[in-house]
Image (cartoon, rainbow, N blue to C red; front, side):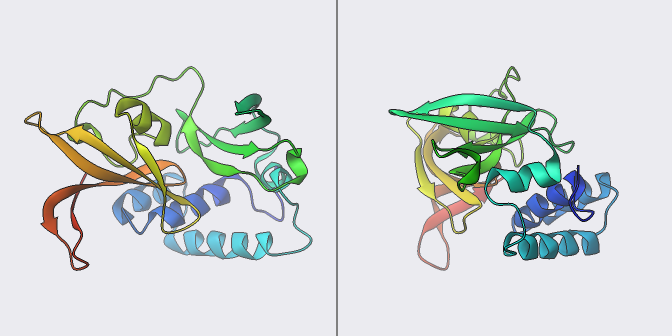
Length: 208
């Protein structure tokens, strides 16, 4: 499935473009695995931004079906008293994950409530016990939240970014308060607080 030559490869490049601010070396390797170039990365992101701003481009869940094909799975979800629906697509770069959009009761014609990478059903999460286990691209939001409760979600610096405030033990077993940064739901970086102050005065040091 594709729309004007824009399909799964190009969509993965769009996801990677948003991750390049954190780990350009990981993005470079992933772009190579897709048989693409940095120019392709920029062009895919430019085309996607133009498409989603076009009045002719499908809206809501239909835009993802237009470029990725029918969802691999459509799953019921319950959030409080609301009946919701999750749609999943497999992406070759992350075979153990799925790209998920969460739709409210209004269905496919409404904007998704969430759009991110999640753990694929039946695929076990990695063992996350200490800060050393929180390596870039190793896990998704739900993996970290389940491993280090009670993690507190916070909005990130952009619509495709999320954060979790949590406490995890370091190599010596000492609990360390930290913030995990995610792009499209995939872990990018963990900043440990109380280690050193950055230029803004916030005590934080990245790991991973």
